Length: 82
Image (cartoon, rainbow, N blue to C red; front, side):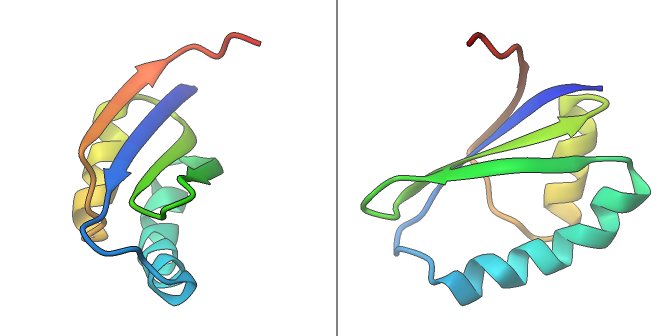
């Protein structure tokens, strides 16, 4: 398992209800594919978001996002440096 980042941008700032709906659509797909959501960071203007997942690889996360109709700009694997 490794760190996978999903970058998202929005034309219109999403509401909390919008984000909750997407999370619900993703949940079952994540469980089936052993993906764990770690955290999300939203820009102050609510136009950009980065989501962190613990997942086997970026392609698996990409499939989940597509199946859940969760829009994204980029998905990539990385390492955390703290």
